[in-house]
Length: 323
Image (tube, rainbow, N blue to C red; front, side, top):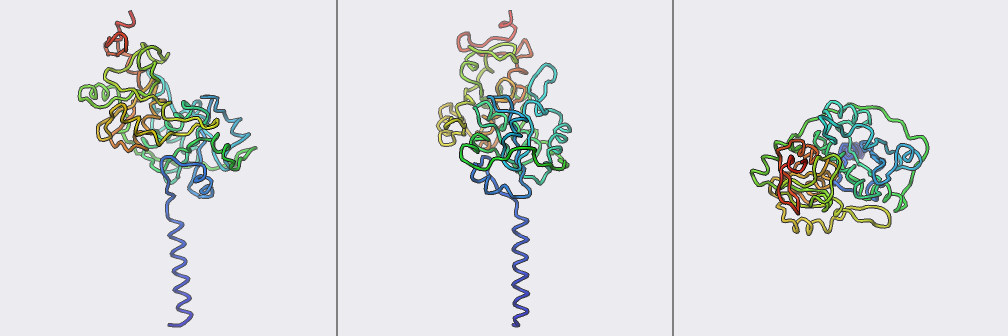
């Protein structure tokens, strides 16, 4: 075989290999660390989405301009339309068309690999990233992850920080494919109570017991039969940055006797803390039939006739507690 032919074959093989590498999608787990993100920042399809807000003093657009992960984009979790109030219920998922516009305007299309960056300043702040993650999953987008430790962890570990005017980017077109099985309605929760499905309350223990009450819910208490898996139990403060406690997750699941094969619905007050429980159970622990009730106790307590359970008083109807 001539040297010319061998050279052509070699060049062709190299070209095919290079093309294959270019077409290989970015592979990431639902939870990525700062080292992994730093190594992949130059990937063309990667969008780093910073969702810091006032939650847990996480920051805002000004904070983002002062210090951010290089190349990242900003969207306020609390102010930019990731949740909305409808029919007196706070925290609901907006209309699909509105979310398509929100996501597309961030330069995210259906081929983007999205890493969501919370502030990393508290357990409630982690729920911001988990809720945006859940939203993207509901809309049919699988290439999404959360940065463990958030921006605080990124800084803590000494990776490069950008400042000044953020880099411009073009809007994109994002087309959703709705996964209704990931969203639980009030009717779904009522049916779950009849079928003995697993209801998981992500609120702190005092809310679960009925000793504390959110202003979003009409009365205190939990949905009868629910199990308590407080969202904050999943996060550890490591020198000022909050990281997900993956190693202790299985023991927490075992403590409340959850079965990963059973239908499970996570809830809280307005579908924020519940997003953390949904994320750790679905994406980390591998529960394959789990949804989130975004209306949560705000929606559940709208009806005077629905039951709630309190540790000291047992099961009561909403109207009994209002009188």
